[in-house]
Amino acid sequence: MGAPEWYLSDVVLLAGLAYLLARRWRDPLLRYISLFSDYFALFLLSAIALTGLLMRYFTKTDVAGVKQLALGLATFSPRVPQGVGPLFFAHLFLVCVLAAYFPFSKLVHMGGIFLSPTRNLANTNRLRRHINAWNYPVKTHSYAEWEEEFKDKLVAAGIPLENEHARTVTSYRT
Image (cartoon, rainbow, N blue to C red; front, side, top):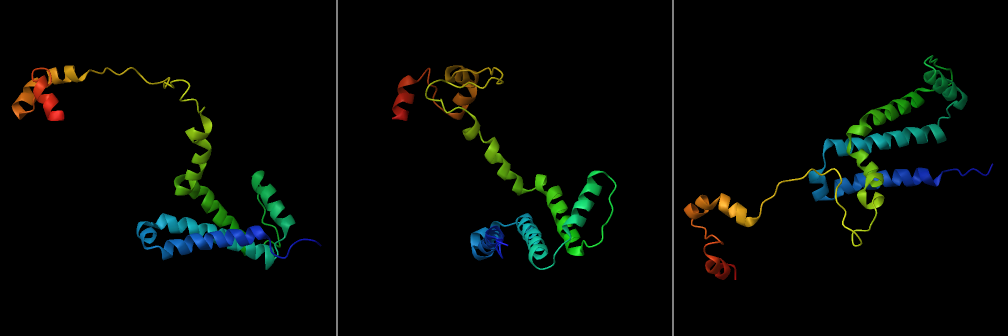
């Protein structure tokens, strides 16, 4: 009593997945750069959503049996209860495939939102200079030192030297 016939989240999930798939098929540039992994993730999420919706609205699943199976799996003594249909096992299989596929897929990029430096670091770059604490010292040399190191190669290539021909280089730059 009082429960909606269709949950809005179910409609939004299916509409979002349908939009992403239609956009991939409709846009020629996006279709050109799409890989099998892009379609696999969309179809996997769609299959999980569809099996879940089928279980919720059309073929009722014994929730007590699912709980018994989950407790059996958690205690390493699984028993297959009566009343849990094959649609639940298909849904469970698809969720397990997603759990195994997720760390190696493009879907894991969404975790970067929480690890982004713009979210986690202080935005005080105008107040003080931030220096990376674990950077090792790098030996650098000036342009004059570099020119002295490669002087013979520069002269052989016909490139004017700044130290000896300051007027030529200055007029060349302007």
